[in-house]
Length: 373
Image (spheres, rainbow, N blue to C red):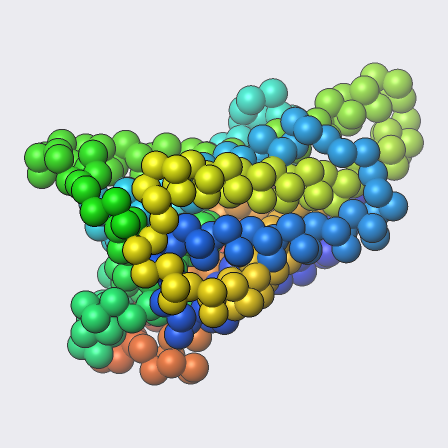
């Protein structure tokens, strides 16, 4: 098992890459997002091979693929969710659900997982609560007038979508982790109304919130299949060596051995959904604009995959109850810093005040979570 120090380093790398992985596609038109997601997942698949080679081609785990499929399913739902309730509410609901579901899976040992050992449960609860507050604060940051005009014109700007309250449907979107919507705004070439368009305002809001909750649950559970397999091996080792904890720990599985299966699941899910999209919707009406997006989308996917691989390592070293709050709350801060330093997207005393509060809350949450171990 990786050391705690390595776990925290990997958590920091995951936060960095989740907060920046959409910069390569910032200036590209993502269309309705389906083409982007497909090629992003190609980049994800590419990263899976070096990890598999590094680990000496461990046995493929079909069950671990379901985790990747869960993530992909949640990601696909992002467009309809934001069409129903908007970016801010959608992100807040699924981001909070993602954090809570992942944290609870480790804290309480849900779905057959081994519960994470936490020395100070109360401090851990406080840290998670502050992390949720930080997530809400990022949503309060308002786009500048220029950003609003850019969004209205349909020009994509994915960097700010994670945390700056920008309409995801006008861009490419996140991760996320936190953790991850990657779909754009325009409708497919079918031209007809979607089922969401046919709902009344109240029904649309309820449907959007329900879908956001489902998305968050899927994102929060995407590591569970792989973790379940690893925990089964840990239980067997504990039974074989009940009086020798060091021996049992030395035989624990390496999380990297499950990365390939997980990422293949993401790619397979994306291909399935893209084919269904072509059959049902006929594709994006202005698809001739999209080929230039391939390479940037692949780079974006590779960066996202690096973050996801680091998250696997952090999970193994720190446990879900520590890694999830840290990694889901951090990318918003990174994206905000990029918006200030690289793109001059955050302006105004109010925005900087809210950002300062969010920064303080994020750091405070992480300190509480680390100390609770």
